Image (cartoon, rainbow, N blue to C red; front, side):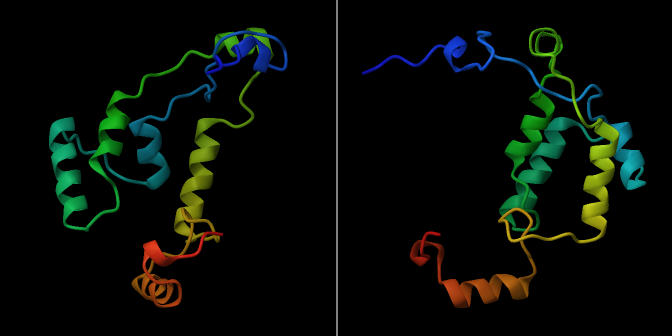
Length: 140
């Protein structure tokens, strides 16, 4: 068995170790509230996790409780090492990316990707009838 290649050999600038890459401003509940024009309602994390699990189990929501748990456990990262050693800086700010996302949601933007593909019941039925069950589909 061979040992993995050290990061310093993989880095195009020869800097070892990992680099945190993130926008300057973290995504906050206030930014989400403003972007969606919504009202914030505090829901304790355990309750939200249980409700999400129930909704997912009943096929009322495609969101698995693991995503909620992950959101509550995600740390803020510090990116000064990437700025100092790589000269990196974010090209887009959090608010403009969020605004673009919300516009895409409101405009029902679609693509041929699995994530942005059509998700209507008619589309699911059409795909099942033309492609068959998952186990029988041909790989691309």
